[in-house]
Length: 383
Image 1 (cartoon, one colour):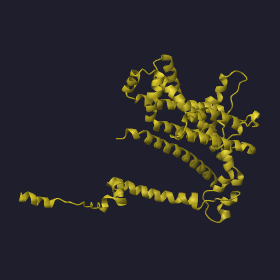
Image 2 (tube, rainbow, N blue to C red; image 1 turned 90 degrees about the vertical axis):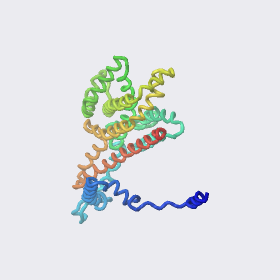
Image 3 (cartoon, rainbow, N blue to C red; image 1 turned 180 degrees about the vertical axis):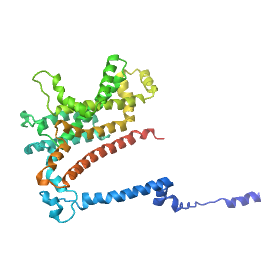
Image 4 (cartoon, one colour; image 1 turned 90 degrees about the horizontal axis):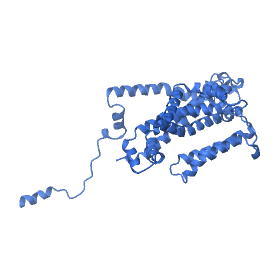
């Protein structure tokens, strides 16, 4: 008993705080050691990257920010001979042409209609993308039904509402880029889903039509589709019937994006376990209800990265409409950079840099939103 009692003296009866870990296993030094210098090849790559950043970043910052010209009324503000110092980007040129970059040749007294269109589009996009938004069903009706009608009435004109007609040949810049990309994105997803379901259909005619359409459109470049829509589409119409010049590339872009979207959705459908189909059929669900409530929600969640990647590619490919004479953002920059009032060595590069920033911000926003949706939808699957 005495020996057993003595052993109790070695039992700790109060909490002792743990000692902090060594400095080399926590903090910035530990992170750098683990991620940047974990091995000799990683250390060499890290050093090479640092050297490239040292070579590239300072000149870029100096050209686009430090030596840039922000204010001016003509080319003299962006010429080194006039300023008396090295001149970088000519942002004064962008500031002077910004209205043309946004509206194109849209009549100045009617440009408020374009502003209203942008506001209505922003409301529709926010309503659809906000996962906790109230009455999202009404938001879908607004985005897919109300907004297109209001957009056509506003931009093209409607005399009963005292809105004079504006020819689409006067549209340009960011307006055309947003219109073309929005039409392509809105129509490509539902048509892509239908084509993907049609390609997996047991009906031979439906499956054959879907396969031929998808493979034919995916087998040719977008520029070919645009030329066909611009020159061949009017040949299928009755005599005297014409299609608006902007409507032709809109149809071509929508069809092209739908074919690619169909393959993305088909990948999600093929990734679904067979048990999901069997379980839905065991519940007595019809094919449309099975697809709407069980299969498609899961399949689309799987292929969210592919869907967003297709949207981003479509948004950037809208620049090709300039080939068929549509004045998108790139075409307006091309037309503005030859203005003799702004003829400087840095004018063209500055205009293209402005376009690059615009496209980057839009594509980066879509990418970040998709990542947020992925994390939210995958939250219930984390263990």
